[in-house]
Image (cartoon, rainbow, N blue to C red; front, side, top):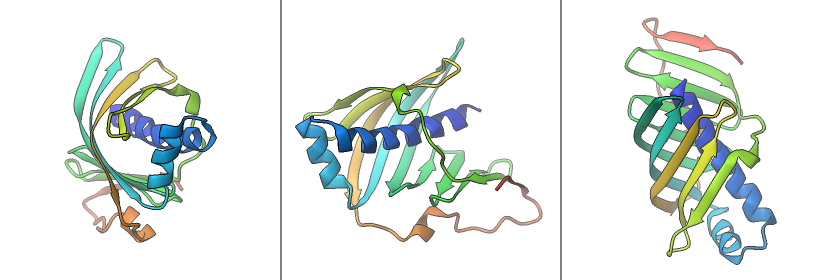
Length: 167
């Protein structure tokens, strides 16, 4: 459940970043969005997820482009090609496949801060159940656009895997 909230937070952040950048009068965001909108964005970040009395911290790597993304958190990999989302837990050989990203409540993304280099430095996200995720961007790089197939798992799931396809 925590991983789903991390994924939702990061994806909502990307959606909010795009929407905010397209509508804001903030010149820094306009410049940043213009510089990144025609490329693939690679982000490494640290995060802290606070749920009731529990606190989870970790690192995540994200590759995002045009509504597609790949996210790695160590044990969990998430792929989204804009149509379907694969959440893969290699440690237990389980994959859940769901319909692609729907709408996100962009009002839940808070405290987006730009660093001195003009790139995103940090942000937070408040989930509807009160869970708060705070993220600090370690690196953000612009990369060459990739094929949509890069945002699909490049592995097959054998008979030893639990596959739940909810599409």
